[in-house]
Each structure stands twice: as C-alpha cells, then as structure tokens.
Length: 187
Image (cartoon, rainbow, N blue to C red; front, side, top):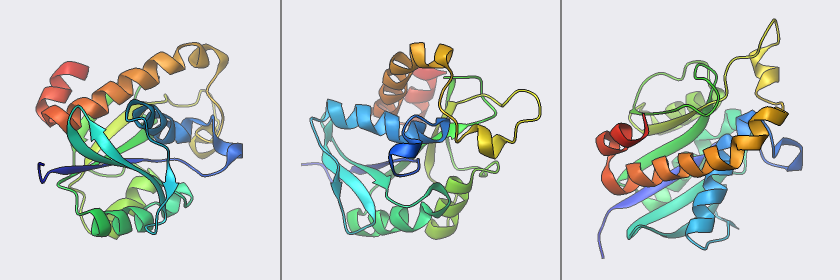
C-alpha cells in the first residue's frame, strides 16, 4: 500500500438552507467524488464530515467542514493533523472566473475568500492545492457576499451536474496524476 494520502476538502456552509448556493460548490463536487468512491460522509472528530477510500487506486480522504465557511480552517487543520496527508486540495467557488471555468494551482492568496483565509491562517501556510470553480461576479451592484449565498441560476442549474462531474474529474486528476498534468487536461 502506498504511503501517499490526499486530503480533498470541499468548502461550503452546512445545512439545507445553503445546499444549492454558489458558495457550496466545494460540497457538491465532494458529493460526486464520494459517489465515485461508493462512500458516505460520516462525522469525524476533526470537525468535518469525511469519507475515506480510493480514487483510481490512490488513497483519499474527502472532508467537508461542519463549520461555516469563514471558520473552515479549524476542521481542515484538525483533519491534516489526524490524517497527515501528502497532498491537500481545497475545492472552492471563485468569483473571478466565468461560470464553471476551472483553474488549479498550488498556493497563492485568498482573493477575499473567507474560507481560504481561514484555512491559510489555521495551516500556517498558503502552500496547498486549490481547485477553483467559477461562479462569475454578480451583475450590477449586488454585494458579492450576498451573491455567493444565492442558488445557481436556472440556466446554470441546467448544466450544473455536468460541470460538477467535470470538476470532480479535475480533482481526481490532480490527486492521481499531479498538478501539471491536471492543469494541462482541464484548462
């Protein structure tokens, strides 16, 4: 058995009120990955819901923090301490990308994303992988903080399942083939 373990974190807010929100795309992508692993999320002492298993033969732990977005760092840091992953990937919404556009990178700033800010502070490093899923910017004067807490539009919802599947493919590629190969395949 290989010693490599990937921790894939999906960002979102807990509870049915937020399920279809743009801010919860990380949870939606992890739900797809869990289905591929035939796993069910279970409460873990880290403060996250987790699924342990394999994706394409690679050991993976999926984690959805049970805290609100801006407090994601605590459960993520606890999961890192417990599982000791060799790779950390955070899947999150990105205002500065058009709907469903994917971008992957290692490190970088938080670009105003409170979930990333919390994780970076709790881990003490910016050096973790990110899979950014574009949710676009709001039109007009709508506050971006309000916009990400709204459900996807009717038009977006028509293609959302396909785009979640593609984002899950990208996450799986990063975990199994590395960042550069995943970037080449999904940019």
